[in-house]
Length: 451
Image 1 (cartoon, rainbow, N blue to C red):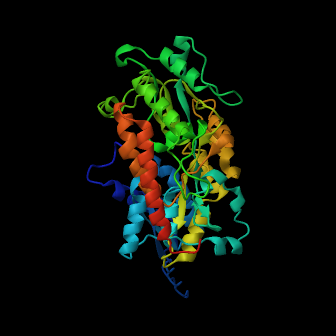
Image 2: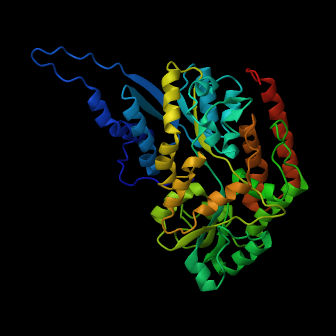
Image 3: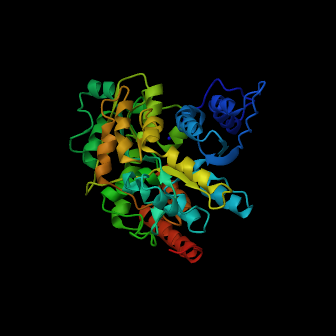
């Protein structure tokens, strides 16, 4: 989802590194903004008035060079604007924005997933982009993928623009499949494995005593949603007002995930992963298949030495999988809303997303026109297009006002079962649904904007 740089001085904090990276990348452009010394007979040029925009993000050292592409592009367009980078982790984004609003200290622009935006937009903290879009018809909002846009375009208004769209797939070690004499997982243009076929292959690829695992998964709600949808279940209703996760379909999907680890024993347990000292199981050759997202291709190309490729997730009762993604919003409290909008439009333009997100393998660009760039990022993988093809049957119902409360309830109730293999999944889902619906009622009652 992130490696760490080994050459950074231990005295330089992560946030400071990002700030320095941004300043370094902007150095040449800034130098060009300094007025030349006057010569005899020449009038001195007035100094350029600089604007500083605070930009909250979860950039990290390993992919900062790709984000810098867009920062440099905007600097060439607006040399009078400095972007001050401020770090907030993915999981802290909503709480950081709400705390900043309470303190009267919001950033001008902030990075957000499709789950982060509804809770903060609903209480008036996000700039309504529609007036800007109406004034600039060349900004083609129809080019953004509908799945991820569900979290940025609601109540008839755009509250931000996404930069990527995500799906989950199977990264697999081709040598392990060849050694076991097992056909590779289905990929582009082929029919997905059934759940039973996946279990059969994973079992054949598993060796005793942890020498080799057939697969690696996690208990997070995002991945599990793919199997909930495929089983015919839902997280929410179409309007995002009611949690519907307590259903036999959802329970069966989650039981299958737990059974992979504790019944079929084809995947390491959460405890084994936690006690491994941070070993990358896939790159180390300990697992044959890893369920992971399109965002992992960049790190796979950098870290994996063997031949690998990408296949589809298996499917249950129906052909459906999950999608989502992240993007950027402007604060409704910005002192420079026009400059913030210009940055947003530049940073999510088709050309910039192709260069910054697609070609490096950081992710599938959220603009359809830029999506083909991801196909150039395969490295050793022949079929990165498997992720793109899956988008044709991908779905997203996870962008609601109570996304943080839903994820917290999920971790406490289902997460405990996934971590131990013990507990009643149906009962856990009832609690998740009950707690989420209580939070939804509270959040909808607190909405301060017209919906």
